[in-house]
Figure 1 (cartoon, rainbow, N blue to C red):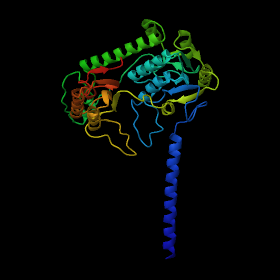
Figure 2: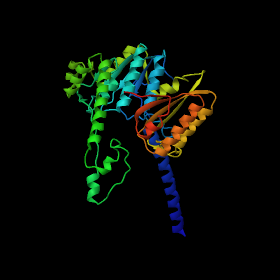
Figure 3: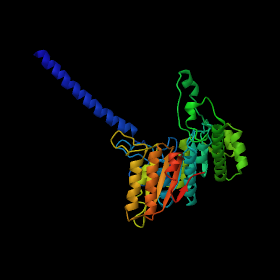
Figure 4: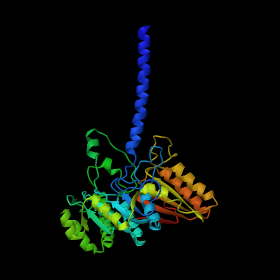
Length: 402
């Protein structure tokens, strides 16, 4: 009996330790994951003299995925664009400080950030960007930052943004060794996703499509970056393709404006803003900026990202919900069609495609919105391929980055 009580006491004590450790672990995880403010960051409301701080060093989702554990996630691309747009008309915000991406961004995201910075500057406010090098070979990280008034770079880093590339794996030879025969319905030689499983290398059509895409993206990036830096596209192309460069060489070539550590660029931004200036990050700024619109006709923004699939977006504490779910998107479109306050719809699409059946469901919902007399304008994110284009094909207009 004595051993029984000792055993039970051990079990109870173990439970207390286990539960307590779990609570401590969750608390520590949330604390560690919460955004850490850099020196000079404001907390709470937007300060009277503010500098918007935008960090592009982390992968950007197109849209935020609401979650009880998602408050600490980096801002989405739409957050960044909205923050720049809101801050442009906010008398409290004097300028912006951007931490440049070092290794490469999605081309469309880089262009959208470039455009947002340019529009912000057009309101008469400064933008300082700092890069701890452009260390990846992709030119897109430089594309995003090129719109800034001043680009700072750490003197011990390098400018390696020398072009644009793509990699495609082929498993045809591997499957062949195991006697496996992949079977796909392929509608055209340029519909080449299946080639990954059926081929050992590029087909002529696949190579043509890939090289055409990369060339077009690269040329667009060069033209936009050249315009932002007030130089000729041919001159910009030469500067990029004759890299890599040391920080000093990049400065001498005019690709950047200053050498210095991030603290020096940060201090410079605060100095430009004036006495008492403080930084405010994107999400705290959007929370503190108040409602963007208080009256007037309603334009519904319906957004989806990820693979197109049937069903409804999963809900729950541990669900990321990343996916373009046809029930969720179609029902939102149908609600907008039925809502008398909604006068038009913007459908934001960031999807590589997926289910043709799910895509057709969303396409049909777009038709219902149009039948209700409401225009539908589609905005493409980083990618809108296959089913991601299908859902947009019936819209009144489609807007995309170059």
